[in-house]
Length: 223
Image 1 (cartoon, rainbow, N blue to C red):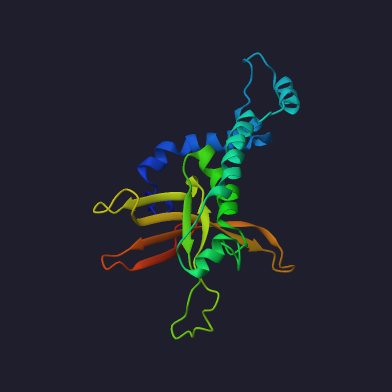
Image 2: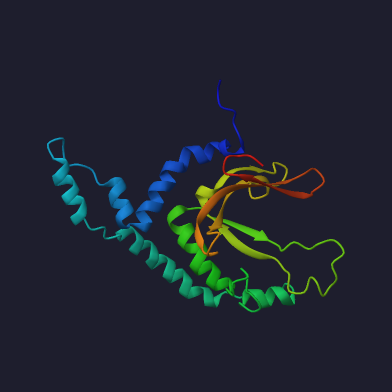
């Protein structure tokens, strides 16, 4: 009996086509021992395992690609101070300046968020997702209950944007259906300290009435 496909198996054709490239691009940018372990090969079939292992121990990864990309990133970052963001609400203006939680609820200004989050992903990987989220507001909440609750942003790596669908009546930049991969921290029950991450899937879509829905799945694809 064949295995039943789940939401965890859903991947956009473009995702399947480019995934291996994305892995290599990220490994090349990040460098380090992982790059050496994955891409260092034997000189020939005559090189013994002992000689190969010794060469791997001595191999240094200079990360030339990372250095070149970071030069461009730093050059763009240094010029963001000249960007003028006008208009919008008072809370928006405070957020882009890094006040009252900033744009990401972590105190980042818009310039800092772009320079420290967007550019290091966009330049080596060519794509990055920016998710605009909002704290949940319970029905019947008062203005006092909702004080300080406003939209904030965070990124999705290109490998974590598993599938998507665009609104054909609008443009390729209007998405009506996306499947994302999240990483939820796991904690030690005794100490309460983080021990790792558990994968889960987030399916976000817009129905015919314009209502946005969100459904979470376990890494197995089960609800």
